Image (cartoon, rainbow, N blue to C red):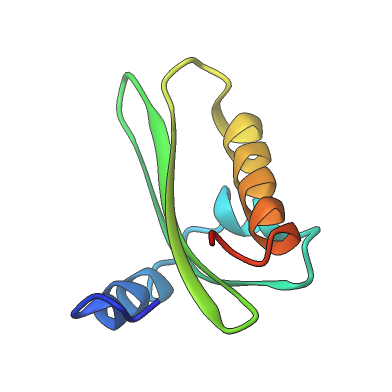
Length: 93
């Protein structure tokens, strides 16, 4: 939300990534949410992504990690639910 110094740098860095398998896919059915970019990573224990999104001009950054084995579908579902909550409740506050 640009409330923090250099938050624009984070959003720009996410926008320059090519990852679209988790966050972008999780937001596809929410036309009111604009995907700004994401970075996905995994190791032998977890898969996760950090993504930037915009709702009514308000920018949010979220990180979702799955270490239980649900992998891609669970992360996409979680991202969708979190973004839908933000839409339905006009943000966090």
